[in-house]
Length: 409
Image (tube, helix red, strand yellow):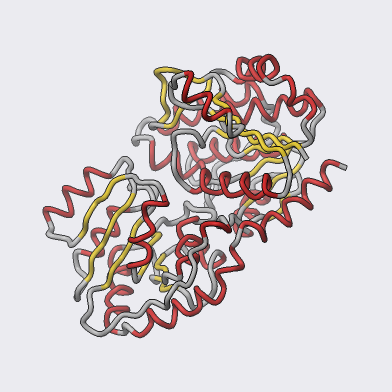
């Protein structure tokens, strides 16, 4: 099959969407499929663009100065559509258009799929309602949500309106973001989500198209060999690793507040950047928290740190729909710590510790209990290692191929 990926979150970025797309592209190509990736990106030289093109990765027309929270922004969807047809007329003969976000590049992919009568599959990766809430300053959230909906509705019809409620759309801005997500999903022929809990939320808010659950996978060739069971002896330093964004939605600041009151030896290594990076560094220094910030690095450079860690953390709450951090922890046999009950769906029961709620006090309590019972590390690590082959992307692609074959027929 010939498959075209479209995403506004790929080039020049790191994170779960990028990791998932790379793993799927590599496995699909290994199986003989042709895969193109189209994405917005920051300005590049002709040499850089040529190197990307050699891997069938193409940068669509993108704004040179306008960046959405340091995310590259494509030009208007109609401009992207014209560019695609002019520069890549071969995509008219592709079998599947495969979208991975809800902004301009993905909008262009959906519209072009309809125009060319090519089946479209939309992956709903994230909670844009919570992303907007955490990224946009208070006082601007409603107007930004209205403007985003206005822009989105120029190109895709908004037949479903989500109104305020007491569930997830508890203010006007969140309701607007759910309106955008739902109508974007409904324009595709088929919808994928990485988790059952997110599928249920999308259905509740009005997605009518069929939704299938396809969990994200870990690249087979990157699965570490001969991983040893993690152990923690009484009195030994607990080595904690963080490799998510250092941002409000990932809740670095509440986690640092929790560490401030932990009783016992620990060390936190933080890999990643984001809006709270310098704030977190200042807070850690002021409160003498044992943490080292390494900045943003490629995952391959995390290997030694992952192999040394006792505990992997993902303390977002009511935000992540899957949590690639947890899958990466499972690949390395690292016990995990989280506080969002939805994340229990992602990794095996018994492989994690879980705080009773999302507060710093509850997280402190859970970490203190772990330090008081260090034998739990070995128990959790054994479970992670026992199940880790289940997360391989080759297992996920079996299902994806079946989905593509059905929608193509």
